[in-house]
Amino acid sequence: MFHYTVETNKAPEEAIAALEETLKEEKFGVLWQFNIKDKLQEKGLDFNQSYHVLEVCNPHEAERVLTRNQMVGYFLPCKIVVYDDKGQTKIGMPKPTALIEMVEDEELKGIAADIENRLMACIDKSV
Image 1 (spheres, one colour):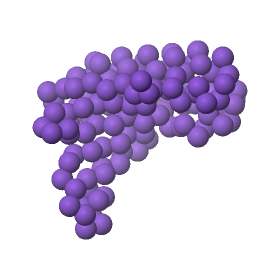
Image 2 (cartoon, rainbow, N blue to C red):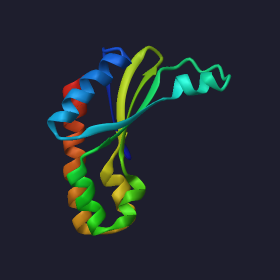
Image 3 (cartoon, rainbow, N blue to C red):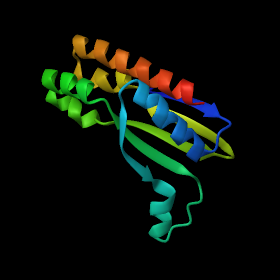
């Protein structure tokens, strides 16, 4: 699968707060948070589902992969989404290992696997 997704009993806002704390433990910061529901409603659309996109980054890891191959920047920063799916809060992300396959670099695959495992652990701790 190209993604990792888990369910939580927390409300989306609670899940985001917990996720931000666990990300700090791995030295990932939330660079930006995009509330899709608010933006679509601002544009006059009737979208009522809570849907947040968090762009997260560990600067040391970003430097490491960009130094190796600048095209990896096409995948940066990493995205984690928190959304409501019919009353159930979900937290998910595209797997860095799935994205890095397109670059065809064995060393980068190992780095992506490490980052992926760390981000999945952050998600798991936040549920």
